[in-house]
Length: 417
Ligand code: 9YW
Image (cartoon, protein in one colour):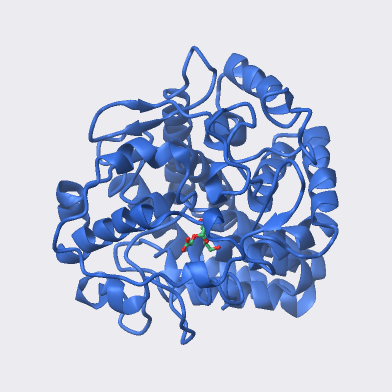
């Protein structure tokens, strides 16, 4: 496995690992395969791929003891994992591995083809789990039970749903370790935020991570529009692999699923702002924040030309990449024009290279080579000093959070190839 970061994150994170495999495929197809096979060893019997696969390394909190997933019937026996998931980017990497293997030819091609054949069913099970356990009413929107599941932990998207999460008096005490590994603790979530994060873990642990019970008890239930967009495009990728394997019915099922989630994404668009919105399932309210997730329709190529055209204009315009004060024309996690934007605070403003990469990948896939190149070129300038920051200050270009972040290095490798 590749640790997500040397000290801050000494374990494997699910969506990091997908993007790390994209980068590794450029260097060594066997290493990329090993990365994803390691991740799959941690897959739950329900199909869920857990958000953390714990290594022997320590210094990260909450670790395996706090998660207590050994009580979960679906958890794997041989590996210790967390009990929630992260965005399903993995099929993007599987496709890249196959393409790189074929380009290399010979034994590497055989390995890549065998890998796809042998693991297709596992990826399919993962997508099916998201489409059922996390979209029980078939609305085409993935429901998350923790902000960590979105990968955008403390995004202002989650402020309202988290405000309703009140940690119980019986929340076991905790000592954070993340604050020991960053230069400035103000770049990290606050202690109050952590109390809520851990209360949800506690609620899930008490029902032994059972999917049906979790929906009943968990204090955080939000339809995540960006995760839904990722599921849509990743399902298309997987459908393409299914075609090649002659798995006709599976490919059709995946295309149906991609269509459902694309339509779900579109159903959230605000006519006023043109941005997609998350839906707080507990309060029934739309979440009206101006974050990068609002571009979910643009990312997944939603089937509405007018919505997507308006989004493209917004994306490159002054409220986003075209904002005159930006160090590089790249999308920050929150609009620089939003008064609540915090340029140094994690998912509340900084630019995340992996997010820029996801959009450049999506643009290329949609045939927008110019858009893809603009993001790539600006990102490579941002990354040129070689610090591989976890995230970057949008106005000064300073690297922040953990340095030598694995997925940042991985997307750089892909851009350089
Ligand atoms: C944490 C590993 C992870 C990413 C997440 C990011 C952060 C972990 O780091 O969360 O403990 O705060 O928000 O997207 O997968 O890089």
